[in-house]
Image (tube, rainbow, N blue to C red):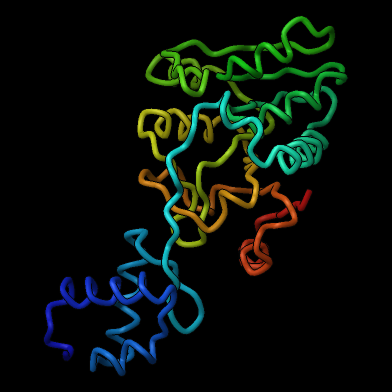
Length: 257
């Protein structure tokens, strides 16, 4: 094998070795494939850009694909203690008198539950569970966006939802994450919801992501947003320290619940 081997074929074989071994260094690629260090790095960058690998210092590790997501009612008991702690920490970021957007998902629902005793708060949401949690509470004004109901998530998505989003503004957006990685940023596995989530990110100057450790260092099929669009990640203490450190080096605030 040499630099003259077509890059797609070489990268296919590199990926095969990477998935078998779990990690692969630039030095190993140079030795095993008889290529230059520059070529080895380009191959790894290409694999990372396509979400097939995750670049680390001196090489790469296999990118773990996020498993299929269960309906929201079946997910409530998954990492439930971590989600409750994350919900308390994220809710503490919301000031009295603020306008906040709360997205769908079980972790953001915990944020909503921790806002029920607040006064003078406006909550915008596309989530039926969030709406049901906060409806009728004195001191909280709830704005619910309409649209097409995604039955598994009990959330409104699609063109009508996105048109409504263009008419509102919030101080802060708090949404969950299907998967988050250093190379691919935020990714989702359902494209129609991803398009709505992109519109959500535009309505506030600050974006807070709530995600437990099971969502970290994972990649799903549809790009939502690069890490540069995130201001704060609220996660639990089981999240890998090197991941937390890498985010902080990128000036992303990380709060450990």
